[in-house]
Image (cartoon, rainbow, N blue to C red):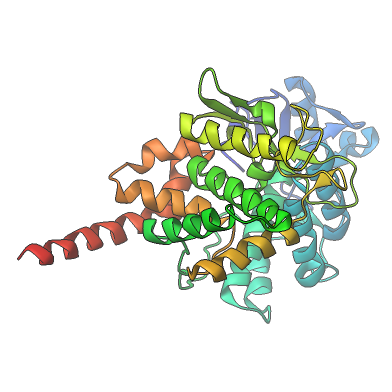
Length: 386
């Protein structure tokens, strides 16, 4: 029983949903299960709940729905449908879930969701022929799936609860030093003096993307979803409400942010406003594009669609090579922002909201090790003066 969702009542084996206030009855025989509905309606009356608990014959006559008897694969389809249409998760997140399911879970958990136990899952995951890192991803997705089952009251408690993640070595987080960033931007500035229009377009595009990604510390999908009117030059803020839709078959360019907390206003500088306006003026004066305020900043005006992830990535990596700096992902500009702020002595607590993390613990878990690394570097710097 999930104590965060359900509370005990004064009656044995009867629990109450904290939010919805409906009752759930625990049944131990002939099989251990739960009953939350009669004739497909939730139980809100305590007398009805008591009758369900005490009169097995009545349960059979009323046609009570005993939990849910769908198998794992059927429930997964419902879960993905909910992710798309109710939770409205971004395309990349759903795509990642489905790929992991197809590779490791589909047709392999041959049990109904009400029969899946912690011991069963422990054995199942342990027997998978894959790396510990991948096993952790599977556990994480199973956590999300069974928590959804609890939320929908298909089951009362998640069998994944208490399952520990496998030990894996943390991959080194990639980010640029301030010197790397300076070399990268200087290389872009050199190309901005060119007479080659194609080179000018490329340099302006990547410079603007880099400055936004580093200055805001946002996710690359959020950067790509920004429109010109997201920037408020009177209050020096930028509004982040969307992420880019990575589904190339969709006519809708935007999707929701990773979570509700990711919708945020971020303070920005006059310098960044200037750079954004400068790029916009270049598109109007030199490329002769009809730029509207609600256009995406990184819109390919020839196709009237967002620049593809592949195009931006290739351009970005071309300049990594040209500037002779470490090859990082565009997303790593976010890590570069955090590392730089920590080197400047800023606390993670103040950085967390700007990053759009759902809670401070997320920031600590992801970037806490950088704090130790920075402290070590500071300690080593003192050797210069000894």
